Image (tube, rainbow over all chains, first blue to last red; front, side):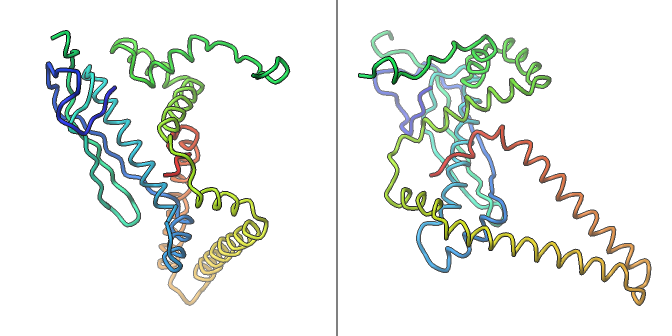
Length: 109
Length: 155
């Protein structure tokens, strides 16, 4: 399935908009990682523990959005975006959202 | 080109359940097939594992970037004996001191006859409740870890 940040699809025409699709998750890591991360806050550099939790949340939210789009029978999701926030201390919330659409090749329309 | 002795042994072709798990993970089953497969998932842990494995491969395949120098260094550091030794010793000391401290504090409070009995009972119930809640959350997490396809992601 195509996931695009653009509103149009090159070489294809949108024939139907199926509506908003989104996936969301809130993830955290165990207390030990937060402790190590707080030590890294003292010495600087990338806080790998949090990079990882954001990556996990991003991919999970993306997969949930794709599952919703699949369920609608979509060919692509356009206008795709990620949004993130902190709902609780050390918890990453990621929302992936876009518009599910049906496509036909431009030369077939 | 690899000679015959260097070739990896061929994996057997996926069976029907593996193909179904792949199709389910990829969202390729129709509504009726998917509903029937979900019914099977509830009863067959092996199918759950197959779906989770396939999803984990899909997720890892999206990480197409080459490792960065800092990641290679970090990976080497994790193998370093001094690093591993100090980290392990640090965790053992920390966890042991917290666990023993909590046990001693709870025991002291519960056995302290100068504290009224209702207060001791309440404190004991609270500690036991926290321990039960923690153990149930830990048990759920340990069961979910093999089914979590995102745990190997790095960045």
